[in-house]
Image 1: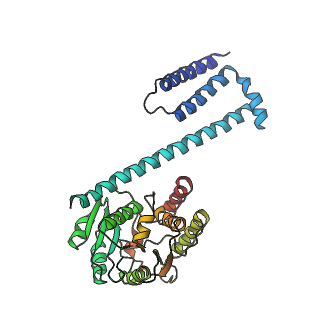
Image 2: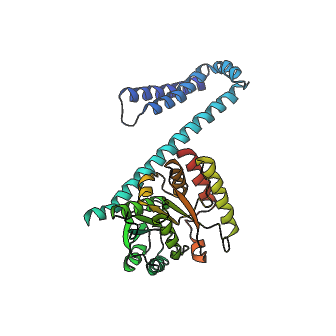
Image 3: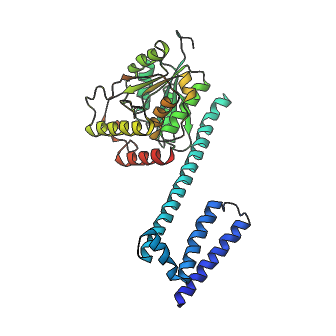
Length: 112
Length: 227
């Protein structure tokens, strides 16, 4: 195992532990979705840094052939999932904000 | 509803329409409608003051939330003020208030729930890109919501009290117009499209927040993902 592998595994381990601790503490805003997404990312990094050959069987199963292609493919899926989640959250916030602004505008009727 | 004397409210969403709003209100009053509700959608100019001076009831959004949100606020206000028929027109002067009368008749006498102004029946003066944009909009609305209309993006519409209560929209911006079509379909509301005149001026075409290709793409994405 090279020094790079050890460093990468250590960093991933720190983030993974922190993520699990936050979820177990039921820290505000740390939802199940965040827990699963974060665990998948850091768990994946840790696994592939310790066992680079672990991706072979997965690559074969997905028909991608190369380990790197598999990682890029999975990375894209994760990035798209995160972007979609972010867009949904922003849209929800926008709608909440609009509702607040609309109610404020209509307070005039209640006063009159 | 008292079919002889329905209470009619005209809702005008306005964002930075200081130059045009007074004229729109005066023209609407001249056409015979006194209950005019202007929603100042977070304007940074004197739209609110100009509308008040012209005799409209003004509700102000603290920040800009979009045409859909403004119309929704206006319709809510009209409902609370006891309107039987609610008409929405744009605040930039492109719509002719003399077209309101046939819309009122369609609801109060012919029993329709919703009247959609159709700009595409007489396309004279309409820029080619707007015609194409509207046709694409109609196709997408039909594809997503299953109801074909000839002008799915028109802001000149009239609603009966029943329709105003039944239509439940959630979007804030230009996708609102399409969402209303969906609600008409889902709630089995009786609707008719009536031809309307549109006056395209350098002012109305020059406004930055108007629907363009970029906003059209954003609208489509919101319709596909969030609706």
